[in-house]
Length: 309
Image 1 (cartoon, rainbow, N blue to C red):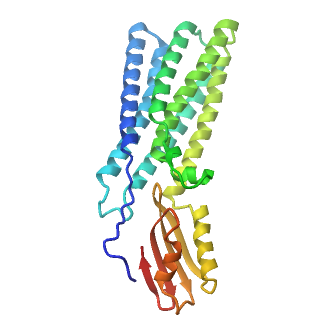
Image 2: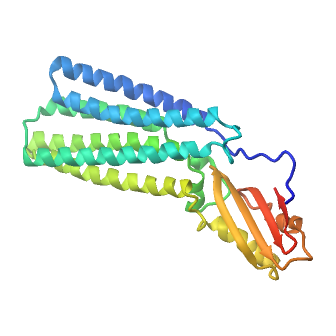
């Protein structure tokens, strides 16, 4: 097997802007969390205490995202990682999605309990807390907004997904979840204050828990596919195979593997049979202009000659 000298196996691009913004979002969330818990303790407000402790779960998720960025950056280039450290960030996103599921479960349990055993609500104070929480979460969401729309090359939805920073997206969904909770709470509390619809607050909590569950499952599916290398159904896979079959119809593909090794990078192994008159370099040249193929291995059988990009 022939390989190009000096070939890199580290496809971690890094995202310093996202890491810095996540740090600011975490700081803002922690300050708000401490302020709410302290005020709730001093003023004996359950609304402040509940929202403060709820915020702590999102602070934990943001801390996890920040730790993933730091670990990926620290170990970038370490020989232990066959294709770099990008998947540390994806693992952080996957773990954050599990936290989201736990938060959705707690929201559901608390909402059902309040629906079955309603308690007196201090509407003015609760609305004030919800509005303050919403403002903080909107500020965090602005910091954590994904920049995938800055990428160009394809216009399809699939390509947009491939360029996502999944760790950043997980952090963004956490603060968006908190913002959604605040919006639903403001609507329900305002209705309760004006029209006495006390039941609307826990019902909105149940609606929120369902939406959070849907988001969490979507994030688990997206990050899980990357972690399990389950992306052979990507359009890129079809493009590579079609390109080879159109140019070399006499060479059936006997083995094919495509998997993600970075946010915008894929590794590809292709083996063809019956091509004693062709070289790996000929096949490689047909694929080199395909965007996203960053590590390419070609093998021809019989004769087993190969070349890595």
